Length: 201
Length: 175
View 1: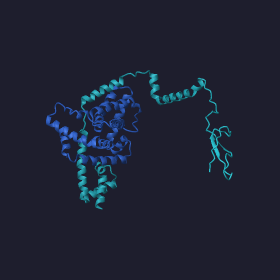
View 2 (view 1 turned 60 degrees about the vertical axis):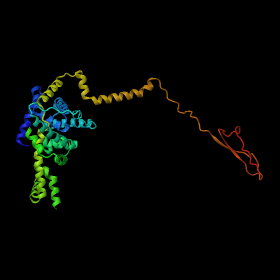
View 3 (view 1 turned 90 degrees about the horizontal axis):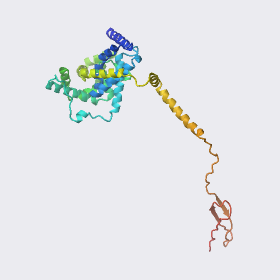
View 4 (view 1 turned 135 degrees about the vertical axis):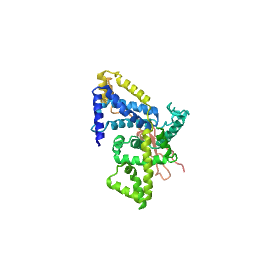
Protein backbone atom coordinates (compact mmCIF):
# COMPACT_ATOMS: atom_id res chain seq x y z
CA UNK A 1 0.00 0.00 0.00
CA UNK A 2 1.33 3.44 -0.91
CA UNK A 3 2.06 6.12 1.70
CA UNK A 4 -0.71 8.27 0.36
CA UNK A 5 -3.23 5.50 0.80
CA UNK A 6 -1.99 4.70 4.28
CA UNK A 7 -2.27 8.34 5.29
CA UNK A 8 -5.80 8.54 3.92
CA UNK A 9 -6.76 5.38 5.76
CA UNK A 10 -5.39 6.72 9.03
CA UNK A 11 -7.33 9.93 8.48
CA UNK A 12 -10.57 8.04 7.90
CA UNK A 13 -9.95 5.87 10.95
CA UNK A 14 -9.62 9.05 13.01
CA UNK A 15 -12.94 10.36 11.66
CA UNK A 16 -14.60 7.01 12.45
CA UNK A 17 -13.26 7.15 16.02
CA UNK A 18 -14.62 10.66 16.40
CA UNK A 19 -18.02 9.56 15.16
CA UNK A 20 -18.02 6.58 17.50
CA UNK A 21 -17.23 8.89 20.40
CA UNK A 22 -20.41 10.79 19.66
CA UNK A 23 -19.07 13.61 17.52
CA UNK A 24 -21.84 14.36 15.01
CA UNK A 25 -19.49 16.17 12.65
CA UNK A 26 -17.66 12.86 12.16
CA UNK A 27 -20.77 11.36 10.56
CA UNK A 28 -21.25 14.43 8.38
CA UNK A 29 -17.64 14.25 7.25
CA UNK A 30 -17.94 10.58 6.35
CA UNK A 31 -21.10 11.32 4.39
CA UNK A 32 -19.39 14.19 2.55
CA UNK A 33 -16.45 12.01 1.60
CA UNK A 34 -18.29 8.97 0.35
CA UNK A 35 -21.84 9.94 -0.62
CA UNK A 36 -21.10 11.13 -4.17
CA UNK A 37 -19.07 8.07 -5.16
CA UNK A 38 -21.53 5.74 -3.46
CA UNK A 39 -24.41 7.40 -5.29
CA UNK A 40 -22.58 7.02 -8.62
CA UNK A 41 -22.00 3.35 -7.87
CA UNK A 42 -25.67 2.78 -7.06
CA UNK A 43 -26.85 4.75 -10.06
CA UNK A 44 -24.50 2.94 -12.45
CA UNK A 45 -25.76 -0.39 -11.18
CA UNK A 46 -29.48 0.36 -10.92
CA UNK A 47 -29.72 3.01 -13.66
CA UNK A 48 -32.48 4.75 -11.77
CA UNK A 49 -32.15 7.94 -9.73
CA UNK A 50 -34.81 7.20 -7.14
CA UNK A 51 -33.51 3.70 -6.47
CA UNK A 52 -29.95 5.01 -6.23
CA UNK A 53 -31.00 7.61 -3.63
CA UNK A 54 -32.91 5.02 -1.62
CA UNK A 55 -29.97 2.64 -1.58
CA UNK A 56 -27.60 5.47 -0.68
CA UNK A 57 -29.75 6.38 2.29
CA UNK A 58 -30.23 2.77 3.42
CA UNK A 59 -26.52 2.02 3.13
CA UNK A 60 -25.44 5.02 5.17
CA UNK A 61 -28.13 4.40 7.76
CA UNK A 62 -26.95 0.82 8.18
CA UNK A 63 -23.29 1.83 8.20
CA UNK A 64 -23.75 4.59 10.77
CA UNK A 65 -25.84 2.39 13.05
CA UNK A 66 -23.27 -0.39 12.84
CA UNK A 67 -20.12 1.69 12.74
CA UNK A 68 -18.74 -0.09 15.81
CA UNK A 69 -18.67 -3.30 13.75
CA UNK A 70 -16.32 -1.79 11.15
CA UNK A 71 -12.82 -3.20 11.51
CA UNK A 72 -10.22 -1.13 9.68
CA UNK A 73 -7.72 -4.02 9.84
CA UNK A 74 -9.95 -6.14 7.63
CA UNK A 75 -10.96 -3.62 4.98
CA UNK A 76 -11.05 0.08 4.24
CA UNK A 77 -14.20 2.04 5.03
CA UNK A 78 -14.76 2.59 1.31
CA UNK A 79 -14.71 -1.16 0.64
CA UNK A 80 -17.03 -1.77 3.60
CA UNK A 81 -19.51 0.88 2.44
CA UNK A 82 -19.41 -0.42 -1.12
CA UNK A 83 -20.06 -3.96 0.10
CA UNK A 84 -23.12 -2.76 2.00
CA UNK A 85 -24.39 -0.80 -1.01
CA UNK A 86 -23.79 -3.62 -3.49
CA UNK A 87 -25.66 -6.11 -1.36
CA UNK A 88 -28.64 -3.74 -1.26
CA UNK A 89 -28.41 -3.15 -5.00
CA UNK A 90 -28.52 -6.92 -5.52
CA UNK A 91 -31.68 -7.13 -3.46
CA UNK A 92 -33.18 -4.42 -5.65
CA UNK A 93 -32.30 -6.30 -8.87
CA UNK A 94 -34.01 -9.36 -7.45
CA UNK A 95 -37.10 -7.42 -6.49
CA UNK A 96 -37.25 -5.72 -9.87
CA UNK A 97 -36.35 -8.73 -11.99
CA UNK A 98 -39.82 -8.88 -13.48
CA UNK A 99 -40.59 -5.17 -13.45
CA UNK A 100 -38.07 -3.49 -15.70
CA UNK A 101 -40.25 -0.81 -17.26
CA UNK A 102 -39.15 2.71 -16.41
CA UNK A 103 -42.33 4.67 -15.81
CA UNK A 104 -40.82 7.88 -17.18
CA UNK A 105 -39.97 6.18 -20.48
CA UNK A 106 -43.35 4.49 -20.52
CA UNK A 107 -45.17 7.77 -20.15
CA UNK A 108 -42.85 9.46 -22.62
CA UNK A 109 -41.49 11.82 -20.00
CA UNK A 110 -37.89 12.89 -19.81
CA UNK A 111 -35.88 14.09 -16.87
CA UNK A 112 -35.15 17.77 -17.06
CA UNK A 113 -31.59 18.90 -17.67
CA UNK A 114 -30.04 21.32 -15.17
CA UNK A 115 -31.31 24.86 -15.89
CA UNK A 116 -27.90 26.36 -16.73
CA UNK A 117 -27.28 23.82 -19.49
CA UNK A 118 -27.77 24.86 -23.11
CA UNK A 119 -30.33 22.81 -25.05
CA UNK A 120 -27.73 21.45 -27.49
CA UNK A 121 -25.36 20.40 -24.71
CA UNK A 122 -28.27 18.86 -22.85
CA UNK A 123 -29.20 16.82 -25.91
CA UNK A 124 -25.64 15.56 -26.34
CA UNK A 125 -25.38 14.74 -22.67
CA UNK A 126 -28.65 12.89 -22.78
CA UNK A 127 -27.60 10.90 -25.87
CA UNK A 128 -24.25 9.94 -24.39
CA UNK A 129 -25.77 9.04 -21.03
CA UNK A 130 -28.46 6.97 -22.71
CA UNK A 131 -25.90 5.10 -24.80
CA UNK A 132 -23.84 4.21 -21.75
CA UNK A 133 -26.95 3.41 -19.78
CA UNK A 134 -28.22 1.07 -22.52
CA UNK A 135 -24.84 -0.58 -22.91
CA UNK A 136 -24.59 -1.13 -19.14
CA UNK A 137 -28.11 -2.48 -19.04
CA UNK A 138 -27.18 -5.14 -21.59
CA UNK A 139 -24.55 -6.51 -19.23
CA UNK A 140 -25.48 -9.06 -16.60
CA UNK A 141 -25.55 -7.61 -13.05
CA UNK A 142 -22.26 -9.26 -12.07
CA UNK A 143 -20.40 -7.98 -15.15
CA UNK A 144 -21.92 -4.54 -14.66
CA UNK A 145 -20.72 -4.48 -11.06
CA UNK A 146 -17.21 -5.46 -12.12
CA UNK A 147 -17.04 -2.83 -14.87
CA UNK A 148 -18.45 -0.06 -12.72
CA UNK A 149 -16.10 -0.82 -9.84
CA UNK A 150 -13.08 -1.07 -12.13
CA UNK A 151 -13.63 1.85 -14.49
CA UNK A 152 -16.22 3.94 -12.69
CA UNK A 153 -14.66 3.76 -9.24
CA UNK A 154 -11.05 3.01 -10.19
CA UNK A 155 -10.77 0.07 -7.79
CA UNK A 156 -8.03 -2.53 -7.92
CA UNK A 157 -8.91 -6.15 -8.66
CA UNK A 158 -8.29 -7.02 -5.04
CA UNK A 159 -10.73 -4.38 -3.85
CA UNK A 160 -13.27 -5.51 -6.46
CA UNK A 161 -13.00 -9.10 -5.26
CA UNK A 162 -13.55 -7.93 -1.65
CA UNK A 163 -16.59 -5.86 -2.55
CA UNK A 164 -18.12 -8.48 -4.85
CA UNK A 165 -17.28 -11.35 -2.52
CA UNK A 166 -15.51 -13.45 -5.14
CA UNK A 167 -11.94 -14.61 -5.81
CA UNK A 168 -9.60 -12.13 -7.45
CA UNK A 169 -9.34 -14.23 -10.61
CA UNK A 170 -13.11 -14.20 -10.97
CA UNK A 171 -13.13 -10.42 -10.61
CA UNK A 172 -10.48 -10.17 -13.33
CA UNK A 173 -12.34 -12.37 -15.76
CA UNK A 174 -15.60 -10.50 -15.08
CA UNK A 175 -13.90 -7.19 -15.88
CA UNK A 176 -12.45 -8.67 -19.07
CA UNK A 177 -15.77 -10.14 -20.20
CA UNK A 178 -17.65 -6.96 -19.29
CA UNK A 179 -15.11 -4.87 -21.13
CA UNK A 180 -15.52 -6.92 -24.32
CA UNK A 181 -19.32 -6.93 -24.17
CA UNK A 182 -19.44 -3.22 -23.48
CA UNK A 183 -17.13 -2.54 -26.39
CA UNK A 184 -19.37 -4.57 -28.69
CA UNK A 185 -22.46 -2.82 -27.36
CA UNK A 186 -20.99 0.65 -27.85
CA UNK A 187 -19.43 -0.09 -31.25
CA UNK A 188 -22.48 0.98 -33.28
CA UNK A 189 -22.70 4.20 -31.30
CA UNK A 190 -19.03 4.97 -31.66
CA UNK A 191 -16.57 6.12 -29.10
CA UNK A 192 -17.11 9.71 -30.18
CA UNK A 193 -20.22 9.85 -28.06
CA UNK A 194 -18.25 9.00 -24.95
CA UNK A 195 -15.88 11.81 -25.83
CA UNK A 196 -18.87 14.11 -26.10
CA UNK A 197 -19.97 13.11 -22.64
CA UNK A 198 -16.53 14.01 -21.33
CA UNK A 199 -16.54 17.32 -23.16
CA UNK A 200 -19.94 18.32 -21.82
CA UNK A 201 -18.93 17.54 -18.27
CA UNK B 1 1.13 -19.91 -33.32
CA UNK B 2 -0.26 -16.58 -34.52
CA UNK B 3 -3.71 -17.47 -33.21
CA UNK B 4 -2.21 -18.52 -29.90
CA UNK B 5 -0.41 -15.21 -29.55
CA UNK B 6 -3.56 -13.30 -30.38
CA UNK B 7 -5.67 -15.26 -27.91
CA UNK B 8 -3.03 -14.93 -25.23
CA UNK B 9 -2.94 -11.17 -25.71
CA UNK B 10 -6.72 -10.93 -25.74
CA UNK B 11 -7.05 -12.79 -22.45
CA UNK B 12 -4.40 -10.73 -20.67
CA UNK B 13 -4.93 -7.35 -22.30
CA UNK B 14 -7.19 -5.77 -19.65
CA UNK B 15 -4.78 -6.64 -16.86
CA UNK B 16 -1.80 -5.69 -19.01
CA UNK B 17 -3.21 -2.19 -19.44
CA UNK B 18 -4.06 -1.81 -15.78
CA UNK B 19 -0.58 -3.03 -14.79
CA UNK B 20 -1.88 -6.00 -12.83
CA UNK B 21 0.07 -8.75 -14.60
CA UNK B 22 3.00 -10.62 -13.12
CA UNK B 23 6.35 -9.73 -14.68
CA UNK B 24 6.87 -12.84 -16.89
CA UNK B 25 3.33 -12.63 -18.33
CA UNK B 26 3.61 -8.89 -18.85
CA UNK B 27 6.87 -9.29 -20.73
CA UNK B 28 5.39 -12.02 -22.92
CA UNK B 29 2.34 -9.91 -23.79
CA UNK B 30 4.59 -6.96 -24.59
CA UNK B 31 6.69 -9.17 -26.90
CA UNK B 32 3.58 -10.47 -28.70
CA UNK B 33 2.32 -6.91 -29.18
CA UNK B 34 5.65 -5.99 -30.75
CA UNK B 35 5.82 -9.03 -32.98
CA UNK B 36 2.25 -9.53 -34.08
CA UNK B 37 0.06 -7.05 -35.93
CA UNK B 38 -3.23 -8.49 -34.68
CA UNK B 39 -1.97 -8.27 -31.12
CA UNK B 40 -0.96 -4.68 -31.69
CA UNK B 41 -4.37 -3.80 -33.12
CA UNK B 42 -6.08 -5.50 -30.17
CA UNK B 43 -3.86 -3.55 -27.81
CA UNK B 44 -4.69 -0.23 -29.45
CA UNK B 45 -8.43 -0.95 -29.52
CA UNK B 46 -8.39 -2.06 -25.93
CA UNK B 47 -6.32 0.86 -24.74
CA UNK B 48 -8.47 3.45 -26.45
CA UNK B 49 -11.68 1.94 -25.12
CA UNK B 50 -10.33 1.47 -21.60
CA UNK B 51 -9.13 5.07 -21.52
CA UNK B 52 -12.52 6.26 -22.67
CA UNK B 53 -14.27 4.19 -20.05
CA UNK B 54 -11.92 5.32 -17.31
CA UNK B 55 -12.64 8.93 -18.15
CA UNK B 56 -16.33 8.73 -18.98
CA UNK B 57 -17.72 6.26 -16.43
CA UNK B 58 -16.74 8.36 -13.41
CA UNK B 59 -18.78 11.20 -14.87
CA UNK B 60 -21.75 8.93 -15.49
CA UNK B 61 -24.53 9.35 -12.96
CA UNK B 62 -22.99 12.26 -11.10
CA UNK B 63 -25.37 13.24 -8.31
CA UNK B 64 -27.10 16.53 -7.92
CA UNK B 65 -25.65 18.14 -4.73
CA UNK B 66 -29.10 19.29 -3.65
CA UNK B 67 -30.39 15.74 -3.80
CA UNK B 68 -27.45 14.54 -1.73
CA UNK B 69 -28.21 17.21 0.85
CA UNK B 70 -31.82 16.08 0.94
CA UNK B 71 -30.71 12.49 1.54
CA UNK B 72 -28.43 13.70 4.36
CA UNK B 73 -31.30 15.56 6.01
CA UNK B 74 -33.48 12.45 5.89
CA UNK B 75 -30.61 10.38 7.19
CA UNK B 76 -30.00 12.73 10.11
CA UNK B 77 -33.68 12.69 11.00
CA UNK B 78 -33.71 8.88 10.95
CA UNK B 79 -30.57 8.65 13.05
CA UNK B 80 -31.94 11.04 15.65
CA UNK B 81 -35.37 9.46 15.83
CA UNK B 82 -35.66 7.76 19.24
CA UNK B 83 -36.47 4.09 19.19
CA UNK B 84 -40.17 3.53 19.96
CA UNK B 85 -39.47 0.46 22.11
CA UNK B 86 -37.96 0.58 25.56
CA UNK B 87 -34.22 0.11 25.83
CA UNK B 88 -34.59 -3.31 27.44
CA UNK B 89 -36.96 -4.61 24.79
CA UNK B 90 -35.04 -3.21 21.82
CA UNK B 91 -31.81 -4.66 23.19
CA UNK B 92 -33.48 -7.97 23.73
CA UNK B 93 -35.04 -7.89 20.28
CA UNK B 94 -31.86 -6.97 18.45
CA UNK B 95 -29.59 -9.39 20.23
CA UNK B 96 -31.69 -12.46 20.47
CA UNK B 97 -34.33 -12.11 17.82
CA UNK B 98 -33.60 -15.56 16.46
CA UNK B 99 -33.37 -17.13 19.91
CA UNK B 100 -36.67 -15.54 20.84
CA UNK B 101 -38.33 -17.03 17.73
CA UNK B 102 -36.96 -20.46 18.51
CA UNK B 103 -38.11 -20.23 22.12
CA UNK B 104 -41.62 -19.32 20.95
CA UNK B 105 -41.67 -22.26 18.54
CA UNK B 106 -40.55 -24.69 21.26
CA UNK B 107 -43.16 -23.31 23.65
CA UNK B 108 -45.91 -23.75 21.05
CA UNK B 109 -44.88 -27.36 20.39
CA UNK B 110 -44.78 -28.12 24.11
CA UNK B 111 -48.26 -26.69 24.62
CA UNK B 112 -49.54 -28.69 21.67
CA UNK B 113 -48.14 -31.88 23.20
CA UNK B 114 -49.43 -31.14 26.69
CA UNK B 115 -52.90 -30.07 25.62
CA UNK B 116 -54.45 -33.57 25.42
CA UNK B 117 -53.26 -34.35 28.98
CA UNK B 118 -54.65 -31.08 30.23
CA UNK B 119 -58.13 -31.74 28.84
CA UNK B 120 -58.31 -35.33 30.13
CA UNK B 121 -57.03 -37.36 27.28
CA UNK B 122 -57.38 -41.16 27.62
CA UNK B 123 -55.41 -43.59 25.59
CA UNK B 124 -57.45 -45.20 22.83
CA UNK B 125 -58.08 -48.93 23.21
CA UNK B 126 -55.40 -50.88 21.53
CA UNK B 127 -57.66 -53.56 20.14
CA UNK B 128 -59.85 -51.77 17.72
CA UNK B 129 -62.89 -53.50 16.38
CA UNK B 130 -62.35 -53.10 12.71
CA UNK B 131 -64.94 -54.69 10.43
CA UNK B 132 -63.59 -57.98 9.29
CA UNK B 133 -63.38 -59.17 5.74
CA UNK B 134 -66.04 -61.74 4.88
CA UNK B 135 -64.93 -65.24 5.69
CA UNK B 136 -65.22 -67.77 2.94
CA UNK B 137 -65.72 -71.40 3.80
CA UNK B 138 -65.68 -74.21 1.34
CA UNK B 139 -68.18 -76.87 2.14
CA UNK B 140 -68.10 -79.96 0.07
CA UNK B 141 -71.14 -82.13 0.13
CA UNK B 142 -72.48 -84.69 -2.21
CA UNK B 143 -75.49 -82.95 -3.63
CA UNK B 144 -76.21 -85.05 -6.62
CA UNK B 145 -75.05 -88.18 -8.08
CA UNK B 146 -74.40 -88.37 -11.73
CA UNK B 147 -74.56 -91.40 -13.87
CA UNK B 148 -71.26 -92.60 -12.69
CA UNK B 149 -72.04 -91.48 -9.17
CA UNK B 150 -68.64 -89.95 -8.75
CA UNK B 151 -68.77 -86.14 -9.08
CA UNK B 152 -70.01 -83.93 -6.35
CA UNK B 153 -70.43 -80.12 -6.39
CA UNK B 154 -69.34 -77.59 -3.89
CA UNK B 155 -70.73 -74.19 -2.98
CA UNK B 156 -68.90 -71.25 -1.61
CA UNK B 157 -70.84 -68.73 0.42
CA UNK B 158 -69.60 -65.58 2.10
CA UNK B 159 -70.11 -65.33 5.83
CA UNK B 160 -71.10 -68.95 6.21
CA UNK B 161 -68.31 -69.61 8.73
CA UNK B 162 -68.58 -73.23 8.18
CA UNK B 163 -72.28 -73.50 9.07
CA UNK B 164 -74.64 -75.09 6.70
CA UNK B 165 -77.51 -72.73 7.34
CA UNK B 166 -76.93 -70.58 4.33
CA UNK B 167 -75.60 -73.28 2.18
CA UNK B 168 -77.27 -73.68 -1.11
CA UNK B 169 -76.70 -76.40 -3.53
CA UNK B 170 -75.97 -76.06 -7.14
CA UNK B 171 -78.34 -78.09 -9.13
CA UNK B 172 -76.74 -81.10 -10.61
CA UNK B 173 -76.48 -81.23 -14.34
CA UNK B 174 -78.97 -83.28 -16.10
CA UNK B 175 -77.89 -85.48 -18.89
